[in-house]
Length: 296
Image 1 (cartoon, rainbow, N blue to C red):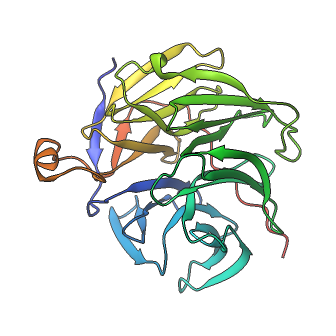
Image 2 (image 1 turned 90 degrees about the horizontal axis):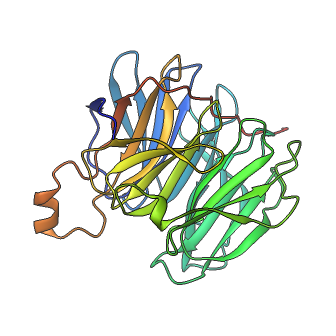
């Protein structure tokens, strides 16, 4: 266990904090309260946080350029104008199935998006992981209950994903030019690999290919080397840690989202940090988030 300074960001509590993303050009972090239908924008330069209300649930944000973002929402993939927040549909995402929503996702080094869906009540095997290049989403892996931990090796040749419901992380070989699978997934991490318990939730990889996973119910973020060995674990002052992103000009800090979803009044009183967003001063060796490649 490694102790490090942890800062709570000046932002309101999230029922389900998720989907953190960092834009290096503006030194700004973004994340969601999925169930609260909110997009948070934290500017490190002035320490201010702005909350943007959304018309529906959303879970993934990615930079396209200085003016536009890609948002994964519960019925589709959208362009968002950073200037006025206007949304325009790029492609539907299970829009004909009101029982599902988007969940974890990330842009591959090639600029293509991997995005997972799940049942709004976490119905068994209701989710799918898709690949998206700006046209129509292509299904990659079906029958997933709670897709999480979508991230990639720095060279784009390995992809990772989890099903939180079965507490397993898989890895799969990829075409680095497209982010499409070249074979079948193999098991990478299992429940017994989590040092403080809980379940595998969101993950991000650093410049050395270490996979940093936020353990839902484990109140921690742990790093696993490409061979699966545990590198380090950082505790977070909230039990339901949900996802992580590298932030800061040197990408040497880690932002971690958390949630109070499912906690009754007694559990919330016992876990007062639940739902807040934190930055760990861990001296990380992060890598920058990739822009989504949108050609128009």
